[in-house]
Image 1 (cartoon, rainbow, N blue to C red):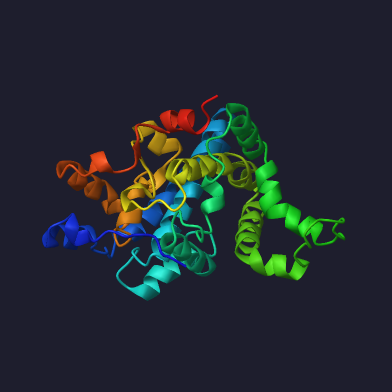
Image 2: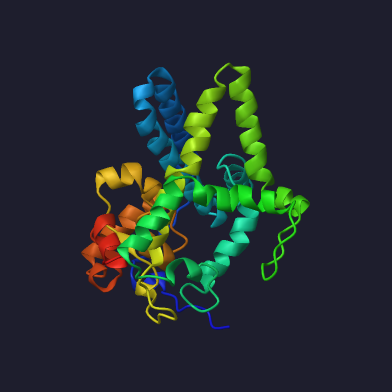
Length: 307
């Protein structure tokens, strides 16, 4: 299997620039994780204080749930903290998902990005699609159907005999092992909120965002990162896309600099908080004109679903 072409950082940065960009901080990753959880707590408190704020709180919590995934992604690349033990501890225990299985899967994505062997190729291959198709997908996300299909349906199907022509369902025990982190975290949250007398807050301001807004912005993120990129693309500056997100897009759609995805694929050793600096350096050197970029998420969606 042929790996994807790569770039050499020395071709783009002076040694002192690269040393600064790739430096692992002993506090910034931890500060990002703390910020993410504090933002979630503040949004939940706001929604609990005033029911009128619940729609905004749902969007904000869903955005920060994606933020936890983004920070876990940094830990999977071992750039969250200089200590590998602290890096893995934070990524596994404080970022809300199963990091170790994700690391193996995700590093294969980087090794074969947009090549035939890329495990994420299925996410970008269908585009462009019709606007009606995109609207149906987003409705399934917002209505909880995507969440049910990905999280709940495997457990329901484990009790049933598959129909003729259908793939065998995974056994219930295998599903529990696969989803143990999701199940365990949500059980702890549910019990803690119920014990405090705020059980409805967990349902409305943790599980509801996870089932609605999180799938929506996760789909938008997937589209923005690799959709409309040719399979077996030979140019490493075109394997992924950077979206010039506005402040409000970063607030509601793209937390923790996740929109700088082309820079991330070019230089996986750079922590997420240094991606804006890498972007500015590449702009000053005239490299951005050769990279795959989009002016906004709205403009990209118009290309991905033109009619």
